[in-house]
Length: 123
Image (cartoon, rainbow, N blue to C red; front, side, top):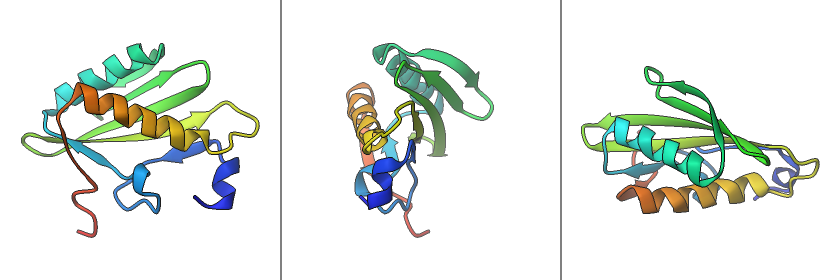
């Protein structure tokens, strides 16, 4: 992690992220199953769903410490990528956004069958 990452309040996952644990994760499921899993994840985190868009495949939920925007994308028939954008509410976060994303992915691994990390990198 870079020095300036310790002072950032927002972290986002992507296919080609420079931090290995913040790369997109893929699951063996359909798009609607991924959305249901993210809704379940919001319940587990004691969050309230603020925005749900089935056409854009986005879910936004808030907890008392952070806000999450989850984007669910299906590049294949039985393959779904889930990306997160986290905004923490701390004055000096000390990289807690990265830890929150890692924790969310661990919980998603228990809810959905895991397929891989950053499968379409460099395409």
